[in-house]
Length: 154
Length: 154
DNA sequence: CTATGTGCAAACCGTTTGCACACAT
DNA sequence: ATGTGTGCAAACGGTTTGCACATAG
Image (cartoon, rainbow over all chains, first blue to last red; front, side):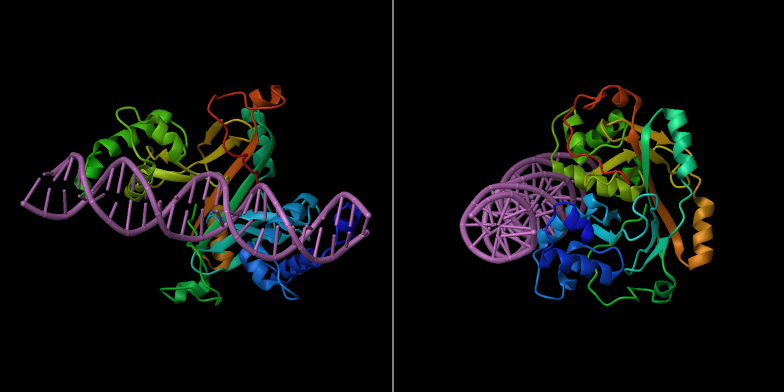
């Protein structure tokens, strides 16, 4: 929030609401989920998109792509840049596990050496069926909110 | 093609054309690129989507997600199932390098043991700036076709 | 007071679908 | 002959944008 103030951004009710909502959700969330989670007053979808663009730019938020065509965002509350993580996502319910270490740094430097590419980054997600969903043959076990799309695995 | 015939699918001009086009392109291609590459006669976008869905189901084609919101497909000419690969994609031009070994199998089994997830798969892509594009400060070096969207890196 | 942010509605764009016609078998 | 596939155009759904109004500074 101070980050905003100092960087020539205005602190509005919407922006505060959106950021609080995202913090409260405490998981990678879609713009739709975010508007629904805003408590005081309401907030337009367009505003969420615009805020997310801004926050991402400021490094307050990270965009996650799970390959189902929906944008997801999560708070980048860890150290600003040095740290990123990947996810283990249940194909049936919404469960998402954070994986906190990433072993791909040396992979990247090897690729750089081998192919001459620079500024290499990566995108890595794992998909599977979580323990709860293994028990319930058919459908999601964990959460109650409506499923949107099936996640296609790698 | 025989795969189609045997599996209760009809061998039509469109399907042949689409598959040939994809083979000729020899890289992960968007539906748009595929229609444009069909030589004999023309083919509707909808047909490409339908054919890709079918071919993917038959294991003839793989769907690639590079995170720019466009579907891409590539021929799955390698062995049907045991083999998959990842990509190293230039953020500026269309260059895509195939990475032929995947070191994540044991990572998956570790995740399975640790979190209890099953049927684990993954999605892994690397992004960077290819050697040619490093020389040309501003724009794509390699190919001539119009850029659609910038690829957001991991 | 004024520049920035917001809501609303329309535009966009890739993808999917309904339907009547075409064609492989 | 007939059931499957195709083109066309409309529908869809997430995201983006234009514009007039609201508001933080």
